Length: 201
Image 1: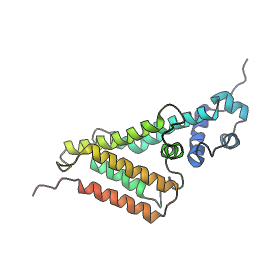
Image 2 (image 1 turned 90 degrees about the vertical axis):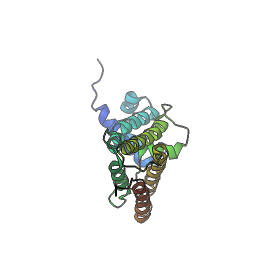
Image 3 (image 1 turned 60 degrees about the horizontal axis):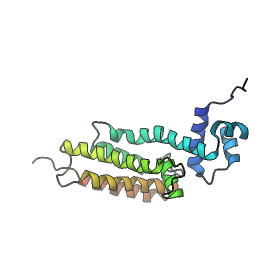
Image 4 (image 1 turned 120 degrees about the vertical axis):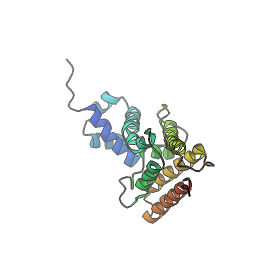
C-alpha cells in the first residue's frame, strides 16, 4: 500500500507560481522549492518528476488564474474603451501595484528565455497572442459601438497596447521609478483617449 500524501498538489503549484515569479526559472534552486513548498525533495520529484515539469505546471496555473483575472474583462462581450483604460490605469498605478518588483510570470519568462520557450508547450507565444487578441476584441467591440474614430485599425492598436502593457510589466519587475511607470501609463491612456470618436455636434 502506497504512502499517503501529506500535501495537496494544487497548493504546491500555487506556491511554486510565487517562487518562480520572484526568482525566475534559473534563479530558483531545488533547495528553494523544498523550503518554499514545505515538502521534502523526494515528495517534490515524486509528484512532478522535475523542476521543469513543476515550472510548466506553474505557468499553466498562472495562465488560467492570473491572466484570466487581469485580461478576462477585455474578452467580455461588452468590453470596450473603458475596460482598456481600466487595465492601463491598474498596471500604471506603480505605487500601489502588487506587481512591483515581481512583474508578470509569463512576461518574466519571455525576458529570461527569449524565443526559446523552456516548456515546449508554447506558453510564452500563447501569452502574447492572448494579450493581443484581448485588446483586439475590446477595441473591435468599441468600433462596433461607434466609440472609435473610423480611421482606427483595432489590430494595429492592439499591438501597441500589448507592447505598452509588456513594457509596464518589465518596468514594474525592475522597480523603475514610480513616476516613470505612471508617466508611461498616462501616455498610453492619452493615446487611447485620442482614438475615441468625437460626440455628435
